[in-house]
Image (cartoon, rainbow, N blue to C red):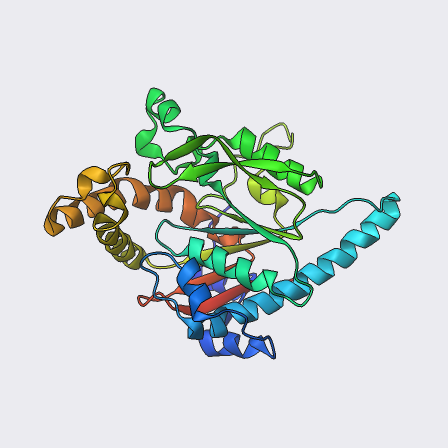
Length: 320
């Protein structure tokens, strides 16, 4: 099949684009439930997000998700009535994807705070797919340490089992935990997810798909278990700059801890730190972005496009 012309592809896009002010107007009367203290707790090290950004971008998104969850619950109840089941509770699952340094973790944490403060006070849990990375020892033995964060570095069967259990309405489902200090999965430590109303799943490759099988057999993807998905988007130039800024901040922060996997970078000069961060980005994160992460952007239900100042400039919402 011939490739579509770019202008034609935009013309028939399944997304509707909203400018920043246009999207902000969709907040309606959604109340601000976040404080400066809340924001300080949830935003990542170098994120420049403020309450104005929350008001203009995340409150409208919270309102939209509220409407979607309510509609989903009605559909779910109708399905239960058809199946003669009345005891099953299944979370509404939201996936948050995007590049390293894009701010997806901050987005996921802000949404968790906002969604948990709806008038119905739903139970909202957050899981990051970092915990489903293969342990460093396994990555090293298989020569995959330089591919950490790439699809092949994850324990995909375990992640799929977790998602299937969540969507089956099982109780006390365990997810492995990860330490960014030691840069490794924490042995014998888990997070227990017990039938939340909403579950946010955050990770760089959560919208990844495999090659379709020629025999037609179903091969599940993580995103098959999502009810809604969000992609945090930015230019490669901005992502590189943000990654370097974060690396420099960690150099005088977490890297100074002797237990840190990156402790060796705490004493290098700023010049060498910038060179190291740039090299790591170019050889690992940029490759992963181009090969695996960016190609999944069209699969999202909503795309938040950021500008150089970290602020969202455009919102793309998939048409229903």
